[in-house]
Length: 502
Image (cartoon, rainbow, N blue to C red; front, side, top):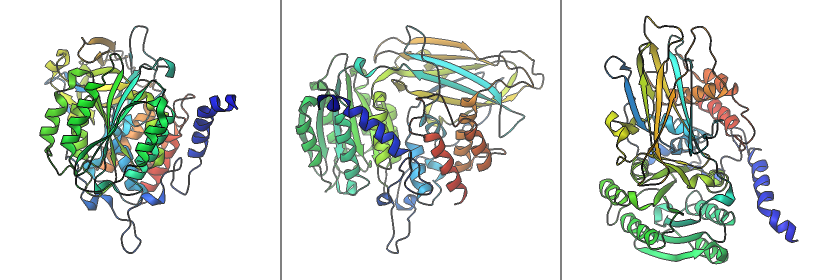
């Protein structure tokens, strides 16, 4: 019996992966989605979630920039994936997502890429590829890759999590509070006895429903989670302040001190302006406290607020559309809650054979070139084992020289908040005209980006169509073992098919 108990977490993990890969119905991926999460009207017909007041920031796409005018491009990395899972919910309900909800970088970074581990002494590794651009074969495509160091479970620092849970009336429902409770209970089963959990709820008032408690007392924590109910208005600002106070009070030096905020973002009591909330989270940037935001539901869903808060709060932002996404975030990819690279910035310098370049996505992460060496400037975090991908479309110069180096790729990151940044450098490989040396990860990244541009209605999508997307994705469907255990890449193909038929 003791042996069975010890093996139980592994048995559960294996069974989850097997069950998730089977799919519940046509168009489904590993169990996506439950019919309970579809929004229906009085006639039993699906309702476009975007017609219910969901709010997104309108971002103009990056334009091509002449190298002669500005040879250097700088941006903060973005480890979010919310835009992709929101798209999935829309498509599987029979609707195209609005252009403003599509962020290409979040489509790319929803997936794990088959990138090499960092070199000894570093917690970030970088790599790059350059080849012909699929949607405009007169152009080239540059892929940049980063990977956070993978850390064994036993070597993870002790966790100090403050669960900040929106229990207002707008969080009522099977795809919101009930979905959240299920995922949190599952997460507790995978935490260590020395980890700590506190729970703060907010509706009309703010409550500390569970003081910081060791996970060895899992039964007490689970009872508190099961009692969570949604009702009332939303006092998000006061709750966030209490969460930071709780994090400071029980701060673990060298630990993973993180607020996990679960909400639809609809704050309507107390401090409600996004600017005031951003000012609050920025005041804690150097105190070693991270912020992860989990978005739920549709209908007055405040994506713009949640993405802004995570961007300014040493955090990441995820949209939870179903039970399997909860398991992906809180169980299968839980190591990403531990940041191995902080304030991570990229800078690319283009050389003479490139006439113009365009960064695909990252519109709200572009930085001034001077900020690259400024360690006081906030930037993005990378979790343990997490990969980050960025793409540039390049227009070659008329007198392009064979064997010329295209660009240099520099990355700055900190191993700990408030520390000094470390510099990584790579000369981007020479490209020989007429010979492509790109691999499957290049094709997969190109396919994901093309899909995002199609959904966005991008003027830069060139010849990209759904068939091109499928061909590119299929050519990279089988990465090395362990990169895609949840079969997210094959699942993308089903989404592309469904989106193409809408």
